[in-house]
Length: 302
Image 1 (cartoon, rainbow, N blue to C red):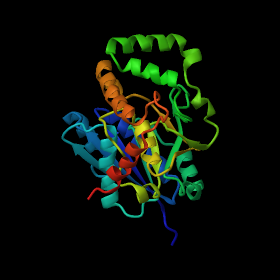
Image 2: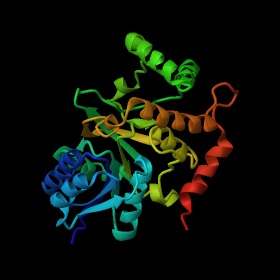
Image 3: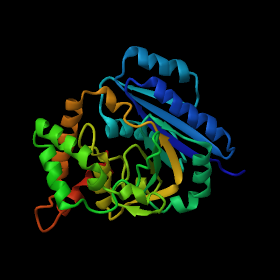
Image 4: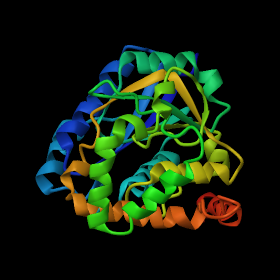
């Protein structure tokens, strides 16, 4: 008997059950079209309202392959994903891939067809980044191809130094966007190793779990792309971008529920941690000693 290709999904939810239900239904509906695929879905709710959670229970309470975990407090994005990853690790055997990400994703039949088609090639890398396309048709990967320029790093430091200054920097960036924005995403047709993949969706292979038990998650929210990049760097690896595998992304559905100043503060916290590892004002950008500590943090959960 041929073994089914088993895929685990972990999605976080925060007061967006309708969007989450759309994502889960796209997984259930479109994976069924391929008989050799079996899916197990974990929804990690980050302390949503009682009515929001009730909608999830009503939609999937009787489903044998959709599992709902309700947190008593909002633990953030990567920490929430880690709870789902741990659940799959303890409860489901023989997973071929773990797909993790936001709740505002839509998975097509082609997504599953490509996973089947590429499964041998996918097995050698730790993290696969798909082509993430938002509703405006913008390709959000590859997110970062090479090291950030020192000028841009300086602008980031200005942005996170003061909220009023951050608003000014944001205003100026919108005016100058046509010639100052990074153009990494224009290379979306080309596969290969990249520095950082966009945080809305990652595919973790069994190789990832040979090195790590969980995602490195030192902050509540934001800068996850760097956190995963640093985690992989600790074992000499990088994300692999595969444009053949694509997902649709609503984009910023959950974070839009948070006031802009709150989001800026979360981002500032992430930037503060980033600065502990990357300093463009020194001869060596990366603090490799700190990088090596990440492996120890994420490898032994006992």
